[in-house]
Length: 273
Ligand SMILES: [Zn+2]
Ligand SMILES: [Zn+2]
Image 1 (cartoon, rainbow, N blue to C red):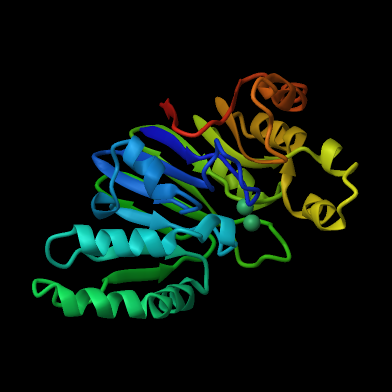
Image 2 (cartoon, rainbow, N blue to C red):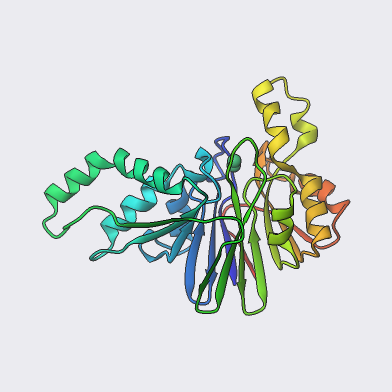
């Protein structure tokens, strides 16, 4: 199993970090988890294309995780020969979200259908909402969804991918909770979005301080990793973004609680297990 952090950023624009999205290659399949800002640019750098994705998984409908959903839809549609339905899985509400995204694309879809005789229909999506505990199985690959806690954003999901005795957990935005523990149990790779609560607490911006109550901070990510006997913790989706060279400072408070490997993600970081 190969996990590539396509975008290690957060809602805050960063010249070096695309928006949240993670590519998982496993058992000959390619799955994309979230589709934040710049996802297909980074996917191209990782030799992945929209048209070859075997599934898109959305953790929640916050804009930073879904900004480029429209780009994935349009690019797959235009770059595919024939009808190539995109499987989209996400929390309750994903069907309406997909419908609205397609509605926003109506002009473009109309232009292209009118211009290209060989295009006979618009983008094809196969959208399914998943509940806590949903299990998708495909050729010995198991993908398990678990409800996470990102209140007041609700519902939200994290995903656990199992294949050939290996486990990767893509947690999404969440504070520690039972669902997160189920995702991470004995995982080889645990990808967690994190904030630095010590820095954010000092911010004069009330709007920034608001994020304190619905994200894991670095220490909490370390505690979750330790409690669930994770092998490698990947810190991701940083708020605020760590300046280059500050990675060790970022990892430090996770290290106080977790003795396994800790990686501070950068775009296109690739981890195999
Ligand atoms: Zn979020
Ligand atoms: Zn986010």
